[in-house]
Amino acid sequence: MEPSTIIFIAAPLVFLLLLAIILSNTLTYRRNQADNAFASVDVYLKKRFDLIPNLVAAVQQYMGHEKSVLTEITALRSEAMRSGLSGEEVIEINNRMNRALRTVNVAMENYPDLKSNTNILQLQASLNEVEEQLSAARRTYNAAVLSFNNGVQLFPSNVIATIRGLRTRSYLETPEPERNNVDVRGLFNSRE
Amino acid sequence: MKTESEFKTFYRTTLLPLLQEIEKLRRRIRVNNLLITTVYFGCIASLFALSLVVNRMIYGVWFTDSKANVPVIIAVIAAIVSFLFYIGKIHANKCTFVARYKNEIIGSIVRFIDEGLVYDAGNLIVQQEFIASRLFYPTPDRYSGDDYVSGSIGNTAIAFSEIHAIYKTETSGANGKKTEIWTSLFDGIFFKADFNKDFKGEYFVLPDMAERMFGWAGTFLQSAIKRYGELIRLEDTEFEKQFVVYGSDQVEARYILSASLMKRLLDFKRRTGKRINISFVKSHLYIAIPYNKALFEPRYYSSVISEEKTTEYFLDLEMAIGIVTDLNLNTRIWSKQ
Image 1 (cartoon, rainbow over the protein chains, first blue to last red):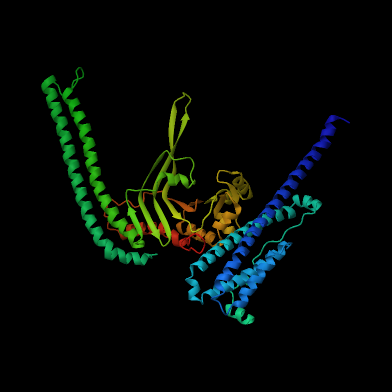
Image 2 (cartoon, rainbow over the protein chains, first blue to last red; image 1 turned 120 degrees about the horizontal axis):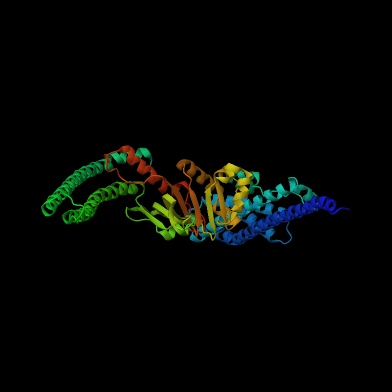
């Protein structure tokens, strides 16, 4: 076989091989980005759960009528501390925690003593901070997932993704009930 | 914050009497300067006439080509020296008027907008702060400014001033001769505020030209620019169309640029209609708002009694001071108090 014929056949093959390597590496890079972003979501979730016992201890002596919400928060924290939880389970517990904490925040408005307690105000500030960081981490994760999913679904990288068995990931959405205003009265009544 | 209609009332009740006094001063200074100019040029003309007469007395001609015209030379030297004094005097008179206008009118407008603020006409944001914002490259070779406003609005410490920054580049011609080229780096209001959240990294929100002009190719170009850190793509599409964001950490960038801050920055940009540059460095917020006119300078050649012009100053000041409210910087529900 003529050398020019070999080059004529080999060149496209080499090009395709290089393209496949680049696309595969890009997909791995994007998947790692998403994993890394999820890890920071996890860090902030843990950070928030660590603040919970202090908050419960500080507010329970004031909040006589909302004991059930505080109990729920403590139970959710214990649940979250269990090992071997999947990502979805962690998110689900977190969403329930969001709702419960929001209820506590709104209920605190009814207790003027609480609002003047510096310890509680500091705790609230810390919780707000962690929630803001958590929201930032969630948005970072979603941005990383968008980039990864684009890689998995768009041609030509979708060919490599199919070969490697990579699937699209789901976003960390804010659940529907959280988008609505919390009906505090309804929540407390349902627990009493 | 004060509204434009509140300002109009303030203008009529407080500023107008002050402006009438300053207008009298302006007229007096202009007449004075005109008088000085007439007398000065009269003297110079007489001096030259006299020098020519003396020349004729000494050399027999008004002006000789063969000898040094000593009286004329003396007259020229006297004219140059006295011209410097003349310019200095005219300028000093004008400065008296400008200083009074700025201290009384601009100072009153600043206090009217917020009592907690102090106006210093001659001061400026120091160059180190300008450099610390990391918004502009290279480091300015000439840096000047005035109209410094500082103080606190609620919990938020702010400072801003007018800044002119230019830098120098040198080019070598074909004959090896070097030519200096001075290029403007920034002209406008440079604003600094204490940001309401603590953060460690450095983040830059810049006007987005590339993406709007070149689409995805523009995004590719943006990601290739590494001077400001890595490209951060945010989920607010409208924000992404107007701005490009760079920074050192993806999560912290989103911690700073919350959904509400992005919306507020967009609204602020629309309201100003300017190509604003923003940076977040060491828990501070820096905003550079470009202007292609001199700010807060009184009119010297026409009457200063102008509601329209004074309202314009108010609106420019209110826009800068209003950043605290516009961006909700006084909300301190996070750990930083």
